[in-house]
Image (cartoon, rainbow, N blue to C red):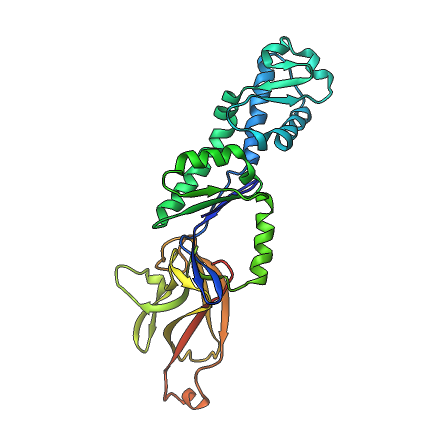
Length: 328
């Protein structure tokens, strides 16, 4: 499992590693998942903690001063937090601190503010860490087995986050580690993927893909407004024909083929087919909530001039969708 914990989001995915004659290859086991629980939310929690401390002393500290303190914490203290040791935050030079009634009760002494490890864990780190642990558990639930978790990204360099992941999943997962420069992993991975574009052999679709078609009209099920009459009977327009479902494993460069037949349109000779996607189960109609149109593909007229006389009313077409290396 790769857990890319950054400033804004945490992105996770599980790969299966296989060794071939061409070298090591990766195959997605779970569809990637992302959530907004990055390290910036730790900064937000710290800002709220500091504001509350000062307000209890009757001091109104300007927002820009609080922001400076948060930035100092983020760059100097946050990566070193281990959950055990108290931390000492350097105060910016500002007269506003002179109006604090009891500086020592707030932890201020000698230009520094002490932050207890207990309150940092409970109020600053844990609300975010717990969300990350929930995401990891979700990926483990989707994989049959997982032998390693690698923590990367800026937030992935947090010793406390690594410690909590080990404590939570150390029994289930054999290896839980972070590289020497976790914040550089994304860049290094991008370069490696560019040099070895075929290293990923299969992906798990994050959405359901299909096309818009006309299906047999079902009385009492399909809306009357979608009913059309054709030579082959009553049809329902705007139906969704599925190519791949969300969560389905697709080989890189795999071709998925569906067959359709086109009716001679009459006065118009324009033929096209539209591709749709939805982040969920296959819908019945392309007009359902959440369905988005990705593309409309023009198709050469499948009927020759002789067909216009009326000797042929339908033509069969094989539609092939190829899923390349980009995330699905």
